[in-house]
Image 1 (spheres, rainbow, N blue to C red):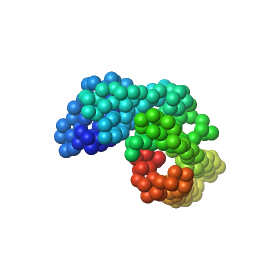
Image 2 (tube, rainbow, N blue to C red):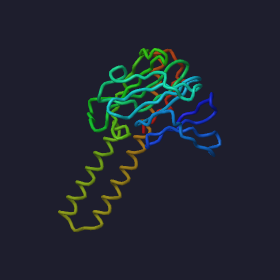
Image 3 (cartoon, rainbow, N blue to C red):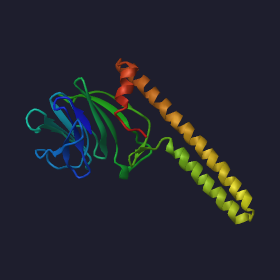
Length: 227
């Protein structure tokens, strides 16, 4: 969903491949019939255009005119934007540029491949800069830190299995469960802190490369879902 200040309404894409206008009071919803049904994933608006991204095999960007009943203006497809096994997870417009969060299709997950942010001109679509985030992505979630949680869960399960096989002391098993549960809670807290710290480091690096104020970068980053 995104907000159009030109139309004074929200634009919403759904998993039914449709695009809707929703008024500011959320009391009226209307299908935009002039936009073809596709696997739409994300959207953003400039003063004159609506940009939609697709979630199909070759992720693309479609630009529609807000002032002429959402007439299709242009589209960019593979290989102009990304590789065939990549997709644009999110898109955001600001001051003549489009910020893209690009990742890999979840069914082609590879831990060596990482998410990246690209900024392109909204008129020519020329790439202005690109920054790898050194995090992996699968099924809508960031996996770089989640791996640690999976490891401790596996270790906990193995410990419990060994205890149950070798001992009949129920109190020992219960104690082990409590200790590992507390350990898991503490680890999750540390992971949350790491994610916040990682976001701050990303913002600082982007600001260093682009000369954009860190505060502005952090505001833009909230448009993207990293957790």
